Image (cartoon, rainbow over all chains, first blue to last red):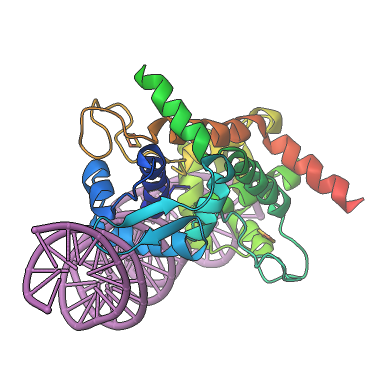
Length: 141
Length: 141
DNA sequence: ATAAACCTGACTAAAATAGTCAAGTATCTA
DNA sequence: TAGATACTTGACTATTTTAGTCAGGTTTAT
Ligand code: FES
Ligand code: FES
């Protein structure tokens, strides 16, 4: 099980944005340089974040992105959802009547993976962007 | 983040093995048929499980595999470890002095991913094969 | 002897990931 | 108003990982 770069970058970028998000928009170029993430890739990511209304764009010179909600209200789960980083543990189609081996019943481990999925998602539901920013500035003191 | 088939199959196979593991060894062929997993693939998986001494092999006709420990003592974490299904959330090399973007410091989110990794691994450390077998037979009543 | 079953290593097709590239559009500033 | 900055979009591609397959063994009960 591993976390993909897309998900990791999305969170990194938003933490960066949240820290520098005083009044002026933050350009992707700046985030790219600070975090070492390809600008083109960031653009793909932010396009999705914008569609889910986590950020707002400001076009033109001196433009960039600003948070569209309070950092406290943006949970990790929202971020991951926006960039399609989903937790997938079961093999069967989630709602199908058939188990993962095509049989009518669920396989021996279906319940286990469901539990696991919930366990992981709970973590994402609890953590907010604010937590991350705080966490980080504390460590700098 | 998703669970790979290798990890899922390893657990499925061991649960199956644990259920039928009375006195006689269980052949991979039987597991393959019951669980719908390719025999060749199962062989790869059991080779690893054997090397980590989770199972014992019995060669020859009427052979197969038996558990090498009590089901209670085999945790999910042991199984995943055996088949190299590791949880990997950080991008940087775990012990390197450099962060994931090559800088000297850890990136803004390193701690978060570490927490996540622990969170997931805790789940694996708690669950034993016995839990899974019980869980399953209860549901059959 | 022979068949059942374990054992091993090499190989490969398909999918997912992590980007790149190209061609725009909008807006600020000089 | 020209030019620069920065967002916008969609298509394309190289790399890596996954999920197996395949071919050839060896061991042992009957
Ligand atoms: S994981 Fe759902 S039936 Fe196997
Ligand atoms: S994940 Fe370790 S430094 Fe970025």
